Image 1 (cartoon, rainbow, N blue to C red):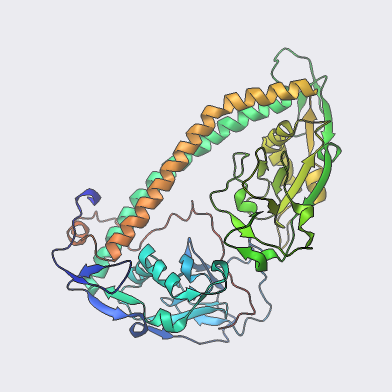
Image 2 (image 1 turned 30 degrees about the vertical axis):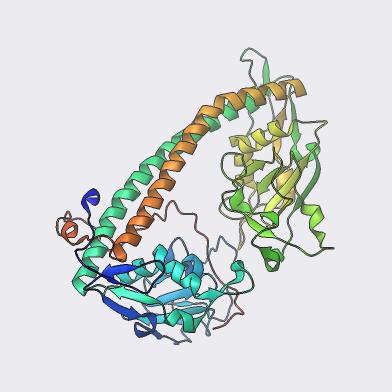
Amino acid sequence: MIEDLRPYGQYQPMASRWIPRVPSHWELRKMRTLTTPHNERNRADLPLLSVAREKGVFVRSTDDENHNVIPHDLTNYKVARAGSLVINKMKAWQGSMGIAPCDGIVSPAYFVYDLSVSNGAFGQALLRSRPYVAHFGQASDGVRIGQWDLSIPRMREIPLAIPPADEQTAIVSFLAHASHRIERYIREKRKIITLLNEQKQAIIQRAVTLGLDSKVPLRDSGVPWLGEIPAHWEVLQFRRLLSFVTSGSRGWASYYTDSGFIFLQSGNLGRSMALNLSFVQHVRPPSGSEGERTRVKINDILVCITGALTGNVALVDTELYAPAFVNQHVALCRPRSDLVVPRFMAYSLHSDVGRKQFKTNEYGGTKQGLGLGQVKNVWIAVPPRREQVAICSALDSETRGVLEAISHAEREIELMREYRARLIADVVTGQLDVREAARHLPAEALASVGTDNEDAALEDDEPGEGAAA
């Protein structure tokens, strides 16, 4: 069905750098003609909504995993009615906008508009598509890209091409069906990744608790998470094997730049014990700042200590392309190389032994995570140094194939996401005609455009509360 899509028969030019042509029967409009500011306030009884670039508008949980403070007085928050367009003006250039799923209230720093499009799901798909995110980027500016602000006059001039109402419905139905198929594919790949991770963790767990020699005598470690260990191994707390532990600096957001020093955050600590540098935030702190304390060195171990990724571990085993520092959500741990092989320590923390202890020691309340003391209290089994080296070598070899399979599956998911984004952009801008395909959809086709929210790393784009609009 998707493979048989073709362009429309006739096109008209459009004054857009990213959309040079649109179907000739679509109506050309300006953003200003379809949006009306909505400034209703004083409805603190309504649910709190927020915006994330991967998810659009959603009901915000009171258990905010991104630790954004919710003020006690919400009377100044703006009301967004179901179907309203909500835009995070500071991150519109990233696509941080969407249609409100229900009546609610949003930060006064958001823009809220009544959107005059017959099908709200089409409006959301259109404005969040890549060509229109680029338009919002063109309408934003500032001192540096991380602090861009959306210009209302320029936003009002963004050109839109709107199909007839029945065609909007067909587009929404088609994209919902296509997204459902793509999400099903991604879920199956995710299941494979889960099984591969379980296999990898079993390999690591066995090696860091029992070693490589199955005939060696065992003894009770005295630690529930460890169980029996080789009789000649020691059981030590993490603190005994460290020369230095700290967490990163706060308030460095004002130093963000497009290049410069690397500012490692929780998202850079993947689930494979390696740093994920596919997205890197850069900073240029002023001279004399206390950043040197948090500068990363070779063989440092990094632990995520707050948020959904708490307990993720990464070993810095290669020189990075620039000096790197950690933020406040990451613990920097410097092993004593005279006592322990850093890679063995990282494997131990990355194993189920470390993960279970991190999970057990997490504190709750309004901010879930680990304190530095709790990180240092983790128990690990420590063999003689020569044995540590042998275990690391064996684990590197045994897990290599599993990691390659995981990487391959993750790459397939990324390619499918890319395909979906391109498909949505081509359909909502009229580069592909889906009217005939929509007429032959199965009866159970969904009524709204889906998003792979299970897989997307949700990053709440809540703006600062003081930036009222």
